Amino acid sequence: MRVAFVIYEDFQVLDLTGPHEVFGHAGGYDLRVVGPAAGPVRSSGGLPVHAAHGVADLPPDDVDTLVVAGGRGVDAARADAALVGWIEDAARHARRVTSVCSGAFLLGAAGLLHGRRVTTHWAREEQLRREHPEAAVDCDPIFVRDGRLWTSAGATAGSDLALALVEDDRGRNAAHAGFGTGETLRRVFHRRLGVPPADYRNRFRGTREHA
Image 1 (cartoon, rainbow, N blue to C red):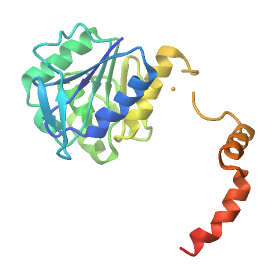
Image 2: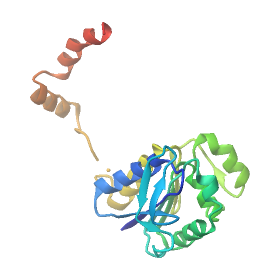
Image 3: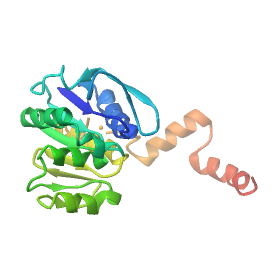
Image 4: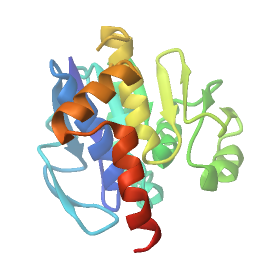
């Protein structure tokens, strides 16, 4: 399954790396980073990220899941007709269309929010309501699913969204992690450190209080 991540100048790098890591660790996904053009794309923090593909060279009908990053550059990106047009075309063919944080504004520019329940970062809630009255904006959940359209709130919520997408593909036992029970944790902790968790906590509590 091909997952295409859309980025642009001044995108939020966590909107890309969080979901990308989730899909990468899950395995079985063909991950593609798409920019307005192939090559380095500067994130809002200044970190350049290499877009292996530009919108002119990745067929929009070859995308299973579309993930659109947010960031302070989203307003300028909405004026890029080629980028918005590619998102619109890709969304027409994709099984799922998603956005992280303010990436919802690019979905709106592509005409994809009409009649949909969506979310975005709380700081841009009123802007999204004002600019897209055709959408039902709800910024209480960390992500919202409305049919094949999925949107998420802040940057870290993008990872939660990606975990939900993997669960949608593979079932709950696939994003499942941890020790399962407290007893399993206690046994592993004792085996690795030589003391049970309660003893470890009591031993080092005084150290923290007097540091």
